[in-house]
Amino acid sequence: MSYGSAYSSLFVICKTVKQRDELLARFQKEKPGQGEFIAELLSASSPLYIDIDFPSGEVSRNLDNYLLELDRWLYENFNLRLKGHWQLEVDDGDFRCEIAEGKISDAALNWLKTYTVEQINDIRRYAENMYLPESTSVSDDPVFICPSCKTRSIEVVMTDCIVSEEIHYQNGELVYGFPKIHDSLNSHYQCSNCGWRLPVTPNPVDDGVLEKWLRQRPQTPDAFPDYAEEMFKLIRKTGHQAVKFCNWRLDLKVKRSMPPFFLPGLCPTTYPDADPSLDDDLRMICQDFVRHALASECCQEAPLDKTIYMASDISEQEP
Image 1 (cartoon, rainbow, N blue to C red):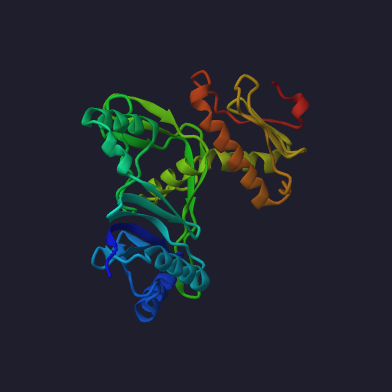
Image 2 (tube, rainbow, N blue to C red):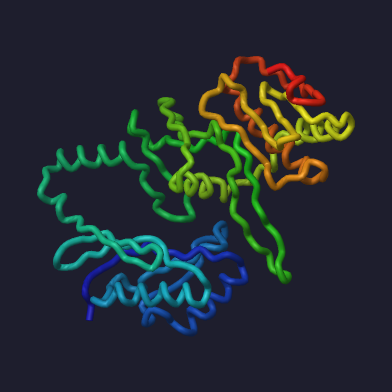
């Protein structure tokens, strides 16, 4: 018997194409969640996303139990979690419901009816200023509303961001990785209409937005390879243990890089597990050192000196 209507934005993100194909095949056969759901690919551009939907839009009173059963099936068989939300319309009113990490939460939407249209519009504008709205689909780019000019012109601007993506084969199957953001010192949200901007801060919300934005675009390789490789060769050629580059200093004796003293908020970096006598470790140190130094260029006075200065010891190097 129907309990009400529901509109779903539920999905599962698989780890590999092989896992996706196995999940879809078993889903059709085993029909987890009492057969109340259908599973299908969202789009060819998002090969690891599986959309979970209600076939007719009509749902039973046991919907929550069926969803939790489906989530348990995904977790026990594939180590995956059901994610997303759905809007439920019943006799008691409308509700927004969400599932994450095996738990369901909901919030009633009826309270808006007690306000006038003008007040509701004010509430909406306040919410748009305070929160970045979620994308309407996990396969689409996020759509943000500018809190200054109220246009949908917000873009994610990646500046001095070092990104890598691990894509490799395992047992003959292509394994899809996810972009890893190593450094995004100057990345920000920016309105292309009025110029409003908001720096990207290191929190899970921003990380998710940036990874989602990057996932649909060609991945950039590690930047600035010339400076890092030149530095590596100079260290090997001279045997020197101290380097100065873009006002940053690197002391290989203590395996520590230090930002300029006049740049607040930047901390030294140590490499306790690296062995500079090994080529791979030294290259890693040089690449990381160069990335941070060049990423701070916008905070320093131009033109920035990008000459690599060597010294046998950090004490012999000018501050």
